[in-house]
Image (cartoon, rainbow, N blue to C red; front, side):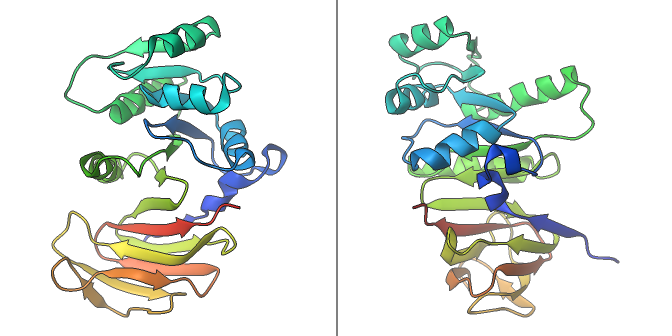
Length: 248
């Protein structure tokens, strides 16, 4: 059976708008402080097709930038959204949508909103999602964000991002990850979350693997090092790729 090959290049998101050639994506701001260099955040914001704050993410957007950036939507159960922030963004034309059900997180409520927009646009392909603030909060919230990588892996690409970390899911197959080592790395890891074990083959890392079985309680590849601009990873099951970020 032919192995499916996937290509990844996170730093495409960081190209200035006039030079951005990546797939259209949606920017979701989760409920964590925004601590990126202003030029990095501005580029991620400008390149996004649609900008959504997940509930209290709007508080951080407002507090950090004092109303410079206006999201298209604020979505969630709105238990964290401050009144002053709600009134300001409402006055600026942001659509604020309350969804009170507790069966899904505010992050997933934003994904559901994206799905509705795609149906309205009769879009044949799915938007990629870049979620800011995916790490740094409670551990259960971080694991919930990772859970959605698995839940939605057959639907769309999702990148989880903080000022120091990037993570995305590598599905079964071969992956070519194009890295800019001035921004990504040097430390990285491949985590067999949600599976009994993974058989991994890699190139481009300091400690490469060839048909190595990786599982929690036995061996996982953490604190590995990028030594090449192109990393290849072949896996027989879904795993998480994570790499540290060095924004300057």
